[in-house]
Image (tube, rainbow, N blue to C red; front, side):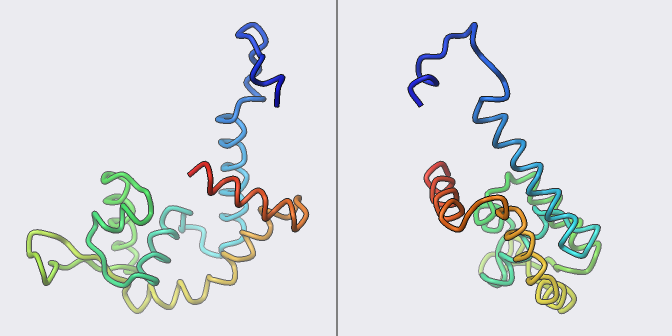
Length: 146
């Protein structure tokens, strides 16, 4: 760790930078997710929206974005693609007609229930190169960075 703090700009190596390594790890995790999830059209971001709606119930688009850490444009795009697949439906929020509420359809509920085991497999496959202790440490450290 000391050598990182003492690195000069002339010694900068992209492959040793946290942003580079996190991006590569994210690419690997996303690739594993896409291979394992069992639905070629479903992205990790769409999965996050579906699982959040399963857990939380109907949410406004804004709430869904906050729960999943998506910006408003991404949230809207994800919802539109899920609506096209009849996995979620939008309707006026009963408490505030100016807001749109989003909820899972029956098809969405079924799909999430069917794919949960695959999502867990993707999680385990992503962490597979690490020992059990390393997995726990890694997840704990990631939580600290979030």
